[in-house]
Length: 227
Image (cartoon, rainbow, N blue to C red; front, side, top):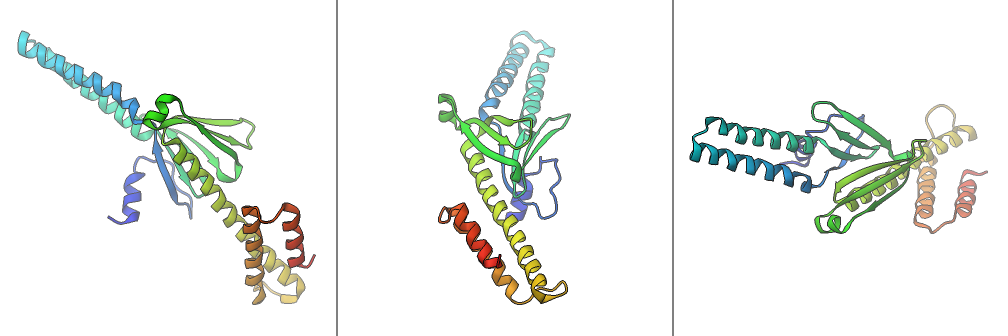
């Protein structure tokens, strides 16, 4: 199975359409522990129904296994559509079996991501993830998340990649604008423009790694742009 087909199968329950150029980085669910009680309920209903039919001859006893199985299927598919999706543009929170709830957090609006786990959460690897955004509504909380650290780390890595992509695009635009202003003319930049854009991206990478302070970065950028 190819990566594309595997990814398509993995997000088959996602109902929010992807934007142009958007790629899915992670799809995660609530903890599997939320399905334990529905499974037990279904098993008890099946066993009780068989017992009533076998020992008392009560034909309606078959309704109990049917109800137990239907209940389990509803809970299972509700679990399958309760997902959190990380893309290279945003974080999507989806839920609802018959209805549909969806909430999005753009990567460039996320200020901080944190997670915490109880003792049971550490044993079964689920927990609470909090996303603080620039919006006035404040933090967005995701509860009972399977592998919360993986969700947090994926969002953090996606933010870094998004910032690099954003800055690379801005660097090319800045270099092209500077080239036209200096006499390149027209919409086609001169051969030096890609080199300037590449140097700007290198400076940004150094700043992101902590090798350059904000002041050093601005000085080097202005020197490169001839300001």
